[in-house]
Image (cartoon, rainbow, N blue to C red; front, side, top):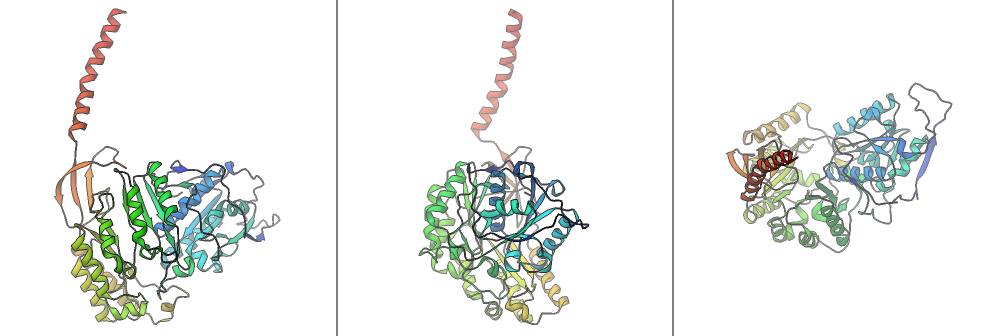
Length: 484
C-alpha cells in the first residue's frame, strides 16, 4: 500500500468473503498478443502475487484501502510499495475534484503500458463506470470492498469484473482484517453516504444515501484497535454529524459510548461534519471535545460565506448558522481548533458573494483552511450552470489563499498535537510516535509552536540509574575475569 508499512496489518484467520453478486463481463483472449496485452497467469497461488495499492481522497477512502489491503494479505497476497514490482494495481479513486480523476486516468494508462493488471475502487468508478478509460478494467464498488480478494483473483485469471451495486442489503462488516498505513491510527468509518444533495458534489452518486453502522459494532471496533496498539481513533464518514439518523440515533449517542472506552494514553478525533446536523447538539459536541482524551478539533466545511451561494449549492444552512456553531465551540471549548473549506468561483457567485466569504475568513482566521477552485463535476446540477471566467476564478482563489497566508506561517513539518489539537514542532532524535511526552514551548507563531523535549523526574532517574549501573557491571566483569 503506497506510503504504508505492510507489516502493520492484523488478520481474521480463515476469512474469505463470498462471491455473491459478482459479474464477470469479459474473458481476455490468450490468442491476442497486442502490444499492451497482459500475460495470462495460470497459477492461483496468491502468495506468489504482489499487489500495489494507491489511494486518493478522503479518510474514508483510506480506511477502505486499509480494509482491502488487510483482506488481500489475509488471503496470501503480498503488498508492495513499488508499482513496478507488482502483478496487479488496486487504484482507490476520488471523484471530488477533476485533478484527482485525471491522475487516476493517467495511472491506468501507465499500468496498461507496463502490462499490469488493474482493479479500480472508490468513488470515480462507482459513479461513472462507463467512462472510456475504465473500459476493460475491473471495478470493485464502495459497498463491496470486502469482495476485493475475489475481484483480484478473477482479474489475475484474465477476467474483467464489475461489482458495484449500491443496493446491498446487509451493511459491510467493521470486523475485517486491516493493514494500517500508520500502525498507531485506526481510521474508523461510522457511516457511509449522506442525507444531502449538494449541487456540486458527485460523491453522493458514488456513496449513496446515509447508512450508519450500529453503535455496538463501532465501539467493538474501537476497543479492538486500542487493544492492538493504536494510540488514536479517527472517526470518519461523508458527514459525521448525520450519524444514526437512519437507525434511530444521533451522533452524541455514539460519542457518549466511545469516550468510555478510550485508554488513558490514547486519543480520539472527530471527522468532518456539516453544520445542519450538529446545531441541535452543540452542548453535547462541546462536552465531547472537552473530554481529556478527545482532540479539541472540529472540521466544519462552510463552502461559502454568502447565503445566496449556499442556497444554490443546496447546503441547507445559512452563514449565520455556521457562525453560531463556530462561536459556540470557541466559547465553550478552550483552544478549540476549527478547520473549514471554501469553494471559490461557484457559478452563481458574484463579487459581493465572494467578499462575504473573504469576510468570514477575516473574522475567524481559521488555522486550517481548504481552498478549492470550483470544478464542474459531470452529471451534477452545478455542471450545467455557466462557469465564471477562468482568469477571474483563479484570481479569487489566489486572493483567498493570500489572505490565509497573511495570518499564518505554518509549514508542514514533523508535528505532535496537544489537547487543543494545536501543532507542536519538537526537535528530537528519539522515536516519539505513539507516545505522550512533556515539552517546553520555546517559540510561538500564529499556526504552530516550537518546543523542546522535557524529561520527567522518573525518566531522569531511570537514565541516571542506567548510567550508574554501567560502571558497576564493568567492574564486576573485571573482577570475574581476574578470579578466572
